[in-house]
Length: 250
Image 1: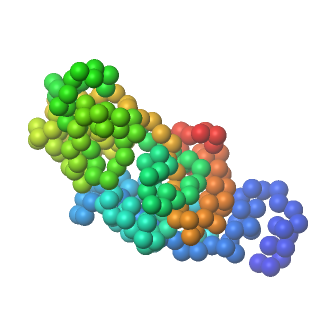
Image 2: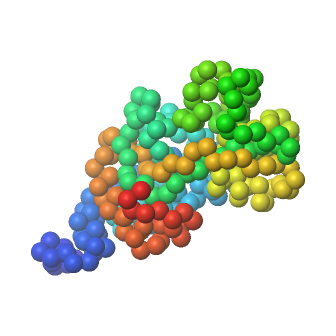
Image 3: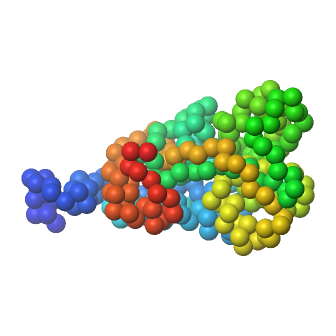
């Protein structure tokens, strides 16, 4: 092994071997907060995508991961308290006002947020500002930059629930007329749990790149994570894991 590392220091012609040779000595076990409501196996299965991506990164960097299942609001709390090192699937805009914004890897996928409606209740996102008293279901602790101005002006009102699973159920149970959810999550959930006559998809209101949010105490991992993510995007494995095509420049 010493001979291999010595050789890699002198000449590094294969990116994968370069990454392994240069980062293995720094590999560590990192704690990851995985979004999953208690007892919600479907949401857990959705979050497995992030876990699989991290495990693929770990195969290149040597890092290992301890995954903790947490609701979104507690994930943010644990990050600030330093109880988790990584929050996966985040855009910096969503956490810019947090006490500890964190540092970020390059993007590994994208997140599309859409409006989901009760059947027959579909509205346009371009609703005029004269229309008020519109309540939109949202996830407690989530930030919605595209909607924030209308929330502040009172044009739209937030109705927070603990997770997207409950938001979708509120649509199906006719308790809310419209909610904001992840397109990828909603399409998968509804395919297995609802009839097409029960809901209508609205427009995409946000499409943002997502990254791994890293606690500042672990900022040293970002460079090797970025290298690994670039390799996984270039060799096509990242698209196979996430179902999203992403150019390394995005």
